[in-house]
Amino acid sequence: MKSGGAFDLSLLNKARNDIKPEKPVGVVDAATMDKARKEMQFEPPSNIAPISSQNPNMRVLTYNVDQMSLSEFEAALKHAFKVVHKISTPIGNLVKPYQEAIDKLSNENPMLANKDWDLGLDQNNDIVILEGNNSLSSLEINLLTKTFDQSAIKDNIASFQSAVIEASTNDFRFDKKPGSVAHYSLNQGNINDVFRIRDFIAQESKHQFHSFGSLRDQLLERGADFIKPAAADMRLVDVFA
Figure 1 (cartoon, rainbow, N blue to C red):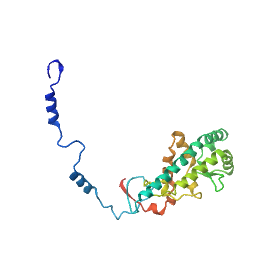
Figure 2: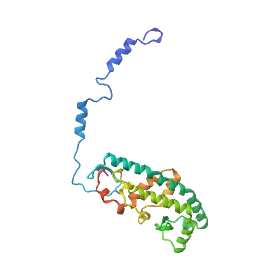
Figure 3: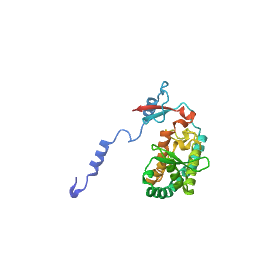
Figure 4: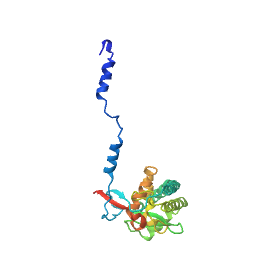
């Protein structure tokens, strides 16, 4: 260091040269890259049977299905964007009328309000009460039906179910994660067997768009009977338990 606190620039430059790496940081030569590519190539095991999409373990997907062409991918992407808000908006719109109805029910019959039941629609878009772990009497079913038989509730459930059914018609190869709605054949006849509207509302009340996580979780939990045969051909290989 020179007088007055000034650095000797020649010493600083010498220090820089001494620690200068042989290759620029982050640059990989072609030979190294080619070697890495060859080491990463592998043949997926052929003797591993497909496992259930409900298996919660970490998984790697290997394919015995055709890959999507660019035009197929673009079409699937447009389809997914078209329905995304159709799914989330009705659930958001359900929160207020559902909460008003459940508050009223809690005042009239708090025990029934706390039982395990859910809401669905029949083929005529009329409210259907779905029993959970608790059995319900005919009087209780009638009271629940009367409480939730509102257009603000029925119309939004109908819109949500219609959007999910539309989403299920997308190319199953677009989203390869287990629980993708495009892996399932859904229709008005089976949708009540898979989805729990009250779970969606609970998630949406916490944070907007959390309903998408609930959608995947519920499909994994109750949708096994409705997986598209082609989607079931994707091989899921356990990485670790």
